[in-house]
Image (cartoon, rainbow, N blue to C red; front, side):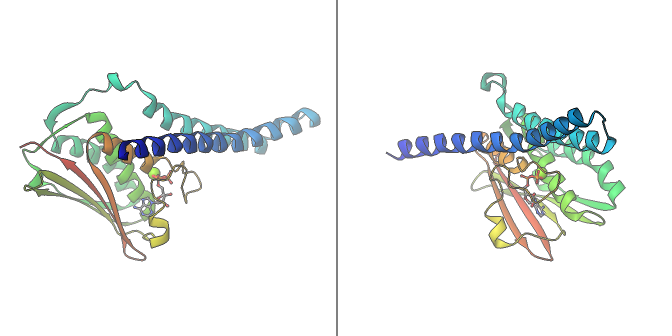
Length: 228
Ligand code: ADP
Ligand code: MG
């Protein structure tokens, strides 16, 4: 019975998602179509129109790109036992440049994670941390700190990575919405990052948790089972 319930829940999630995608893509399409109709009837192509149309196309492109990532055939995704720390360190290295440019300091404490292994897909796990650290950087906007701290729970064989920012924080009400497809407060956001993050973590038997205080910042916790 429980399984039946989750199955039907899943179906409705897929349905919701499909409706969401259709909606999100239709809006920019309608706008592009509108501009093309004006261009056709006026016989001129003002650069303001083309720049809006390009923005709308960018939006469609980023929505589709994020979904393609999910659409890979499941059998192509290899799970391997591998050291966890280098995966996270590579992502941090990747993000460091952008952080420097924005005046964001990234403080890293991962010693507790030394020697721990996880069973997983390195690219997917990297994507998880890219999404979370990017959100933290976007929240801070300019000048601030991101702490990335690793902790271990040996009784539960779970590791935790906390990504803690000192950005504006999230209200309790909005906190519940995180991970809902297309929930975004950003002008150029897709609102897909956390949904995908959550899905990728579920595939790894992991978990995604949030804690936030307005004016103080947000903490995002990634929990993953490890092998010693
Ligand atoms: P996107 O980044 O495209 O908006 P996400 O799914 O990554 O989509 O995030 C959804 C929303 O969650 C963001 O638009 C933002 O409002 C909120 N959010 C996520 N991380 C943070 C954070 N560290 N601080 C404040 N708000 C956040
Ligand atoms: Mg995001």
